[in-house]
Every structure is written in C-alpha cells, then in structure tokens.
Image (cartoon, rainbow, N blue to C red; front, side):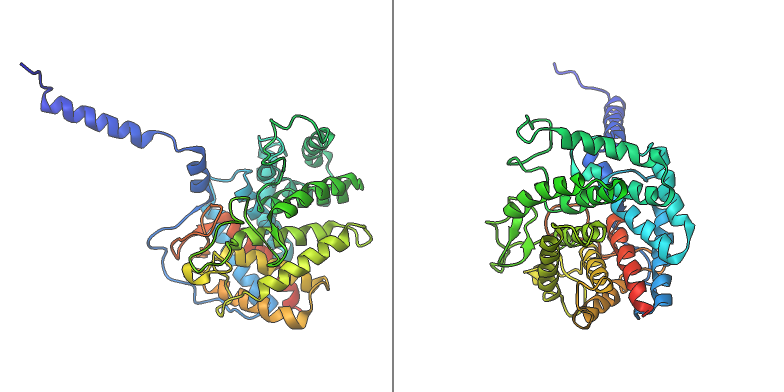
Length: 392
C-alpha cells in the first residue's frame, strides 16, 4: 500500500521550495544587469520641457534632468564595474560643464569607499575602466592615494614578459583586449596615467595591446570593428556583416579619450587620428533619418528601436572632434545635432533616459523604457562636448 503525504504537509513543502528559490541570490551576471538598469512596462510619459536646440542652456538643462534622475535611481547600486565606470565618466564631465558639484562628489564618494582600487580581475579591461574616473579626480587634487593603486596594478601588468605564461590573464588567442568594448575600458586609463606621470611607457604598452585587437577585429573595407572573433563570418538577415552599434561606440569614444590625452607631438598620434577619422566618416554616413543609430549598423531595419548608448558615444566622439579640429564642423555639426535631437526624444518626464540596449555583446531588442547607466554616461559625455559647440 502506497503512503501519501498529507495535503497540508505537501503544500507546505512546495511553498517552502518556492520561497527558497525566490530568495536565492542572482548570478553575478544577473546581479550586474540588475544594478545597471531596468526596462519597466510603464515608465510614465516622455518629457515635454526639453529643447533639442544646440544651445548651451538647453543642453545643460537636459543633462541636469537626466543626471539628477540617475543619481537617485542608482542609489543602493553604485559599484566599480565597467557599467558604472562609463556613468562616472559622464557624471564628471557633467559636473565640469554644469558647475554642479553633486555629480563629482558622488563619484568621489564611490572612489573613497573602494579605496581607489581597480576591479578584482587582474588585467581585465572591464575592471580597469574605473581607473579613468580615479585619475580624472587625481588630476584635480594631485593626492597620491588617488593614483597609487591604479599605477601599481598597471605597472604589474606591464612588467610581465611578453612571452610569459598568460593563463592567468583574461586573454583570447593571445590577445589581451579581445573584444572591441575593451578599447574604451583600458586605453584611456593608460593614456591618462601617461599624462599624469609623464611616463610614455604607458602609451607604448597601450599601443602594443591595441594593435593585435585591430588586426583581429577591424574591417578595413568597412572602417568598423567586429565585437569579437565570433562575428567576421556571421551575417545579418539582410546578408550584411554584423557591426554592433554600441561596440563601435565604445571604440570611437575610446579613441577620442585617448587622443585627448596623447601629446600632439607623439609619434603614435597620426595612426590613431587616422583610425578615428576613418571610423567617424563611416559611422556618420550610416546615421538614420531620426538621428539615432540602431543596434546593428548595417541592418537597421532588423532592429527597429533606436539605440541611445551607441548614439551617445558617437555624438560625444564626433563633437569632441569638432571642438578639437579633427573633424570638419561643416560636415559633422549636422550629424551631432541630429543625434542630440534624437536622444532628447527618449528622455522621460522624470528624467529617465530610455531606448538603451541592456548589457550584451551583439545587437539585440529591448523596450522603449530600457535605461542603463553606461548609456546615461554616454549621453552626459555627448552633452558636455555639445554644450561647448552650443556656446559658439
């Protein structure tokens, strides 16, 4: 005769199991995603109080609206992962052009809480990205404790012989920066460290790591980067090559940040200027009518939603190029103006910036409300450069 559990006991066991699963901690990847943003079903109405004009006052108003919302929305989630590192770059830029110290002070608080340390994965570009915020703050205060951990970490990385056992480094095919996003994460930190210390070895190391990444991922005919080694043989539904918008945004913005910190007389500079100009020209020619690039650069129809994070990085990099006389104002001003107008259309009444693709490594789909901190950082960086153009 079979024994049956009483119904009350069985129900209790099922409920206990459900609670245990509900309370289990998320995976590291899911925790990273949850901290970085969300995409609610009902984000509320879009903003009606912002002007898309390229005028300094209008740009600063939009920047403050978005930055103020993000400061509050990120409470309880601030960390030193790459997602937030890009936000901090934007907040520091916003603080400088708006004169609002709250944005800088919040980044400074994070830095102090983390003792100016880089992320835990030695040699991983994503965990080096926070170093740019640290070194930007160091450039203001010249406090040695702001500089030391980043310098020690990168000195240790540079001291490894080129032919040393690399099993403990996050390499693929013997390439340290094997994904194109990494060209935003690590190179500007090395360039800023070179500027802070006067030591050119950091630029030389940067160049030695960037070169194999370009050899592996840069398509010379398209003047665009594949995200990683999976993509050169893959195609979109329309038969075109797959070039991820935000991935190329990371690269173009990384180039602008490096060039800003590289001496004009440096022998490496001409190579990076040419790469920057070639990419900017190609990307500008792919801009959609509404100004906001889609997740896939060569198959925009397959991804109908505008993508604000890639657009923000493109707009920042091109506006920086205009301001620094590397891009012709007559040709690129209409591009960045249209990009800004397009991004402003995705700001909500409370300041949420939507239409940002979630964390990923390829073109994807998402809700109009989708907002993630790195996209806000890109928007603020773009606004900081455009505000300079708006005053001219």
